[in-house]
Image 1 (cartoon, one colour):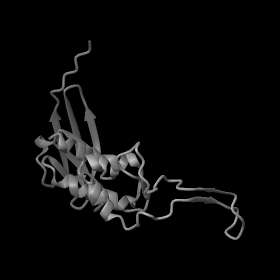
Image 2: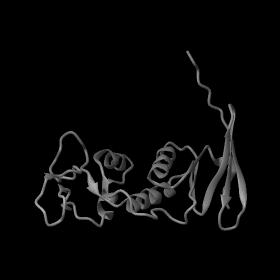
Image 3: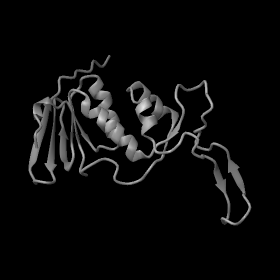
Length: 180
C-alpha cells in the first residue's frame, strides 16, 4: 500500500458517487484526502439512472458536464414517462409526462438539464477526474477498519484486502473554531 500517511487530511470511506464527489470538492481546494474502497473498481451494481439538475450542476462546476453528457449510453430523448397499470395488457391508470424531469426543453430555473446516466458511469467519470487532482489518492481493494477522532487528531486504520496489510493513517488537526 503506497500512501504517505502524513499527507492525508481527510480519509474517505467508499468510492461511490458521494465519496468521490467529496474527494473532488476537497481536491479542488487542495485538501489532501485518501479514498478507500473495498471493491476493485467503482460501479459494481446498477443503481440510479437519472441524474437530476442539481447533480448535473455540480458536474458543470467541476468541469465535467460535457464529459458526463457524452459518456451516457442513453440518448437525450430517452423516455422518462411514468405509466401506472395493473397489468401490461390493461389500460393505463395514470401517466406522468417527463416524470424524471429529463425534458430537453430549456428550463430557466437551472443551468443544466437532468440526464439519464447510469450510476456506474457517473462514478467512473468522477473517479477519473478526482484521480487527476493533486492531493487525492484513491485505493481500491482497501477498506476502512476503524477510526478514532480526538480533539487534536484523527487516526484511521485501513486494510489492503489483497495483501492483508494494515496501515495507520494519522493526521494532527490544526483546526480552531472560535465559539463566539
